Image (cartoon, helix red, strand yellow):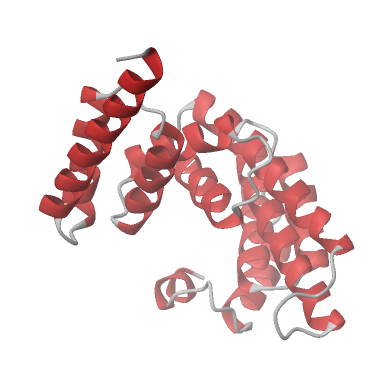
Amino acid sequence: DTAADQAHKAAEREQTELSKALAEAGSSPVDFIHALERHLRNYPESPQRAAIDKALAKSAIESNDAPRIVLYGEKVLKAEPNNDDLGLIDRVTRTLLDSDDLESTKRALALAKRYESEVEAMRARAAEGHMSPAQWAEEIDKGVARAQVLEARAVGNLGNPEEALKTAKSAWDTYPASETAREAARWLAKLGRDREAIEYYADAFTIEDSRTTDADRAAD
């Protein structure tokens, strides 16, 4: 056999094993993850590595597996600097911010800035779906504000509450919502400006926001 023939047979063998493993895994996200990880241990140089990493990141999000969200999400985002999967960027950033680790927070800040940049770049595009130009602009503002909330949290956790407050207020100005109000209130409270913080917490409690849970409102 030529080298090309051997490579083709190896690829076919790998695909057969992968298909069998996934069929045995069934519909469970956890079993799916374990099957793909076993496959990568057997084929660490798999030509399908990028696609498998993406599938692992997606399944980690579905199963709320924080360590794997970070592990595979960051791999995908590092391998594809132009990847504009905002859902993935958002989830990886938020998961990194759940840690008190300094390095994780720095990586979260870099991703939050990337998130904001990706959303801002969408302003130049025509409205998508059935949205009017005004609705599209509002969606962009929502996305920018979400990114700025994450930036504020990261900056504040890195020891700069004044800059965090400035960024959180920018998020509120961009799109007034429970999430942006709560972040501004958080840093006002940290800075001892309780009267202003209470006003923002009141806004956070009263504004309708699909991202706000009953537990968030109870905390406010």
